Length: 330
Image (cartoon, rainbow, N blue to C red; front, top):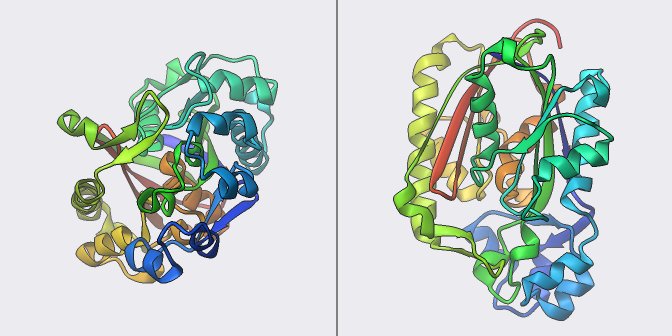
């Protein structure tokens, strides 16, 4: 078991609306976007004027103009999580980070985030693209409690918009930026606890989606969407078989790839709209931050007796899933 003491999230202020994308004259419209991905808005670390003027055709230029570094976004999310948990940064003994869109090749993003927080602790990155948060939690679930410090801080950060060519309407409409953090412990109890989880991969599909050496995002959209729907449905069923009958409320949080993908999974899994938590329509696909940011944004709505199924899929191809159970008072 791994106790979850608190979640925190952060999204940058700049909003890329469907109207903004339509005004770029790249052959898209609000209707076209909603029909295909169900996204209305996304957040970006890039100045909107920069996107208007350049469409970020040369993604490496984005590093010079970005308004937040990954470490700054991660620290914002971490401070919210620490405040909710009622602990201080100096109470944390280990920081694990993950991202699909690092600011640095080396050292680990975890080191930059820890420095931003003023923490002197062991830190490292564990990355599995959009499945990263689930991989982080599954890694800690499998550790012996005595090998871990009392509190561990998990921070995921994404700045996907710096890799997008905004002349490409297919990818420009999908992604947003953000950060999420979790305070967890294998030793100190909390009402919310990850009780089980799993992960797997299909490396033969590693070329289907990714960011290459030139920092440009690419994907085979149809193949990736099909993989995401099938894999998420299968993982959700595993969790439903084990926990749905035992729940006073069974909630599903999936990878925030796009709203249509999530609705398809809910239809296949029999998940009612009120038991499907999501934020993709307002924040876009924030890669590994998507599903955990939903949990953070719903933190005050979690109730005793909830069983919250989380499923994440990503490049690699990789996937992870876990069950969060809530008991007692928060």
